[in-house]
Image 1 (spheres, helix red, strand yellow):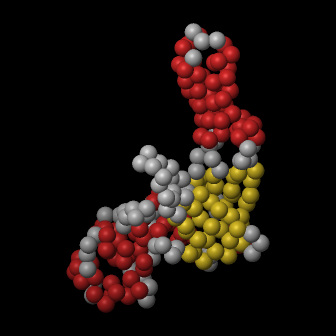
Image 2 (cartoon, rainbow, N blue to C red):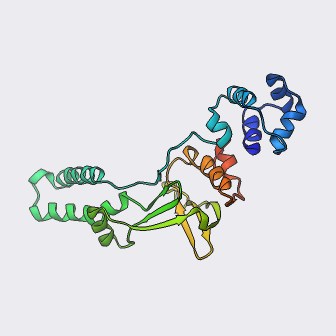
Image 3 (cartoon, helix red, strand yellow):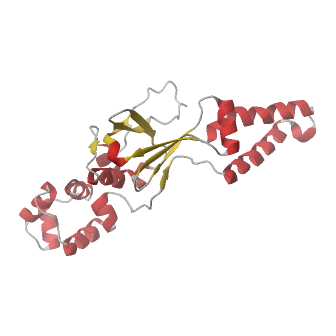
Amino acid sequence: MQDLLKIYRKKNKLTQAQVATELFVTVQAVSKWEKGRAIPSIDNLVSLADLFNLSLDELVQGSPFFKKPFVVGAKYNVRKGVTFLLAWTFISLLLTGFGYQPLGLFLFVFLFGIVQVFPTVFTDYWVIENKGIRKKEYAKNNGLKCLQLLRNQQAEIFINYADIYSVELVYEVRERVSLVDFQRDPFFLVVKTKKTRYKLFINQKATSFLPQFSNYLKRKKILVIDNSQIVERLLLEQSLYS
């Protein structure tokens, strides 16, 4: 929590003296909070939350509270699958002139979308649970992945928190090959256990869960490696790319 207090103070462009004045405490007290040598009282935590315009969850854990299980990624479900099939049927009809082109061309475009486009819409995802992390994986082959999606089946790996040695936050800046290259930079967690390592990709707004999840792992006595200060950059609303 001490790191968060310092980060939020910097974000609000306040000095320790200014925070002390607002809370009617000494500068030494604020310094001790930020160094982890003391913990603010409940009243001071509430006052700090008001001062930084945050909820208590954001102040103490870095991000709003999220209930577990919490899904990270594009989880597939039947409703989304049906929506895609209906949308792609319309696109196929549009591309083939709504019946003016041969039926074979429509079937080719429709099947191409099912086999090549449909599998790219849904990716591997993982779930934060109370006892560990559940990783859901699809086959790399598009045909096999398409079958898995239609059957709503994925390979599953459960990683118990007790087995995790460390979690490293990694953001890799891709070299842009053109001005229209809008692909995401790889952003993921490297989870290491005594036997193996797992790569968990983050493809959604990280500020909604990552700071709190990082603190949650630390409370589980898991080593969290953040050499690039990703959590701090997220909280300060700085660009990870730069």
